[in-house]
Every structure is written in structure tokens, then in C-alpha cells.
Image (cartoon, rainbow, N blue to C red; front, side, top):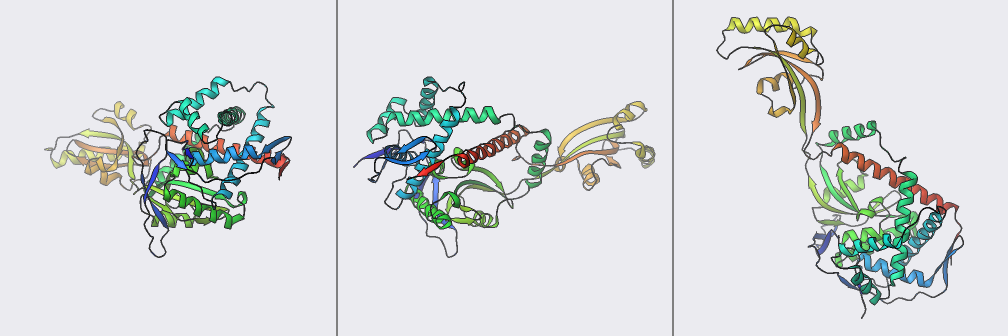
Length: 441
């Protein structure tokens, strides 16, 4: 019996057991983190027959039965599925659609004579693919050749993939730039969501419009993929080959999802699934999801406040009259103070000390200040407040929600850029398809 080598060493999971779900539960089974492979994993494949000849035309380019067999074998290898007769129609559909997209991409690349992908570029990419499997490029190609996948088929796919990435980046890179206002808005949304429950999710999405048989075909296809993952195919590898979601390029990694930001059916599944569990098919408008809950966490929001102060120093042993006098002086000054001028006013008057206390977690501020600023609006100057060091007026010069889990501005900007570039790329492919003459035989 012939075997195929898997083409992805970055798989997130290996199924360990299948737990029969309770009545009404959404779990299809439980997946556990996989140890890093020390050698390529071999999987068995079913025999299948695809007739020679033309199976589709894309404008002036043809796709042959040989091309389709090669791509089906490659999908089987990369996804690590062990195909049965029931799975093959879905694999064939996925292979044909990927070949159509690839022909359209190659035709578009050819319109730009200066866009060249050298043999050295292709070799470097194949070396990187092999390194992910902890093997060499020669060994990688040799093992694939043993099961009928010709090295040229790999090289052709890599060449188009590299050229397409460069074309998309060059054409849309400037349009995918993110403004400061967009980053600020995303950061505010992250801060507001910091106290909500969060889920680290892997996703596979099958779009009904792209699936033979429509919605029912997508449900059937999702059930077949779930069965393959329960039997041993890693989630990430399956997502890379079969998912229609933009996250497919990242192995289905949807990152941390905030409670209440997804459709109700997905939210219910995330709530019902335990960490490590894989969902049954989840029908939403337009398609079907499979989700894998990699982790969960409660929100860890904290109140961060930026404080400034004007104070009159008084020892803890000062008498009541001295404390009262200090309070009266500060109360008279208070209406004239703002966060912008309180430090300069303090330096211009004898007996006053002004300090920028910076940003702190409200819970770490001394108790006297906590009580005074807890409900004060941003920009307020509150007090007088007595502490062991003296009598104070406190300016609430900033207030925001903070969390150790919050992304940085650079992380948010990078995520927004990737999202915009992905959207522009999908629109580009949609336009190429709508303008093309595609005939399936």
C-alpha cells in the first residue's frame, strides 16, 4: 500500500480520543497538543481514478486530469487526511478550485513583466517548507515523488504563490496602511473588551456558495473533515487546505475572540466547549464553521489612572489647625487648577509641591487617593486629601481600562494591516473570477 508524507510540521493538535457528547452538546471530540515531530508523518491514501484529458479551461489555459490528480495528492499530503471514497469528491472540488485560482493568478502575474520569481526564490521557499518538517529539501521532494507527486508540480505551485504574494503586496500595500485613528479605535475596543471572557480559537469555515451541494454540501463536508481530525489529521493542516476563512493561511488561527463579538451560534459553541474540544458543524449565514477551543480566560481588566498632585507637606504629627489651614489654602486654589497647569502653578507659589505621579493601577494607589479619585471623571482635580505626607489636591489626568492581555499598538496595527490586505486580495480574486471565462468539463 502506498503512503503519503504530510507537508506541514506546524500542526497544532493531534487527536487523542473521541468523547461521546452529552445530549445537546456541541463537542465532536477532544484534541490534545501534539509533540513537535522529529520526522515527516506518513499517511495512507485511497486509490482514485481521474480521467486524462481536459477537466477545465480558465480563459486560454487548460487544466488536465493529470494536473487535478497531482493537486489532489498534494492536498491529501499537506492536510494529512486518510481519504475514503466518501472524502474524495470534496478533495477533488478543493483541488479544482485551487487550480482555477492558481491559473488566474499566473495569468495576472504575467501582465507584469518586471515581476519575476527566480529559481533561487523557489528553492529558498522549498527549503523553508522542508525545514518546518525538520528535513531537507531533497528528502522532502523525494518522499513526495515516491507517491506520485512530481517535483515540478511543487515548484510550479510555489512559484505562483510567491509571485502572487509579491503582486498583492505591491499593488495593495499602500492601500492597506492603517491610520492612527483606526489604531486608537481598535485599542479602545480592546480596552472595553478586556473585562469580558475570551476564547483562543482555531476555525475552519466552508462557504456554502463555494461548495457543491450548497449549505447541505458544506455541512456534509464539515462532518467529513471532523471525522478526519478525530482519526488523526491535525487541525492546522486541515484548515490550511480546506478552510475558506482568511485565517486558513495561519492554519485556522483566529486568535483571541472576545465574548459577544461573534454570531450567537458560535458564541454558544464557545461557551459549551471545553478547552481542547472540537465542535460539530455550526451553521451560520453563508456557510458552516468548525471551531477548536484552544484556551479560555476570564477578562483581566484593571482601572489605570494618570495622576498629578499639588501638595503642602505636613508631617503625620501636625496638629489639626495646621491641617485645616493647608486644606483651606488648597481649596481656594482648586478652581484655578487643571491637569495642564497644576504643576506650573505649584512651582510658582511658595510652600507648594507639584508632582506628576504617572499612570498606575488604581488598586496600587494609596488608599486615601483611591477613595478620592475612584468616581472622579477624567480631568477633575479632587481634594483636599490628607495623607501621612501632607495635604493634597489630585488631578485625574487620564483614565483607561488596562489588562496584561491587551495587545500593543504595533500588534494592533499589524493585525489591521493584515486584515485589510486579506480583504483586498479576496476582492481581487473575486474580480478576476467574475471577468474570466471558466468552463468545467
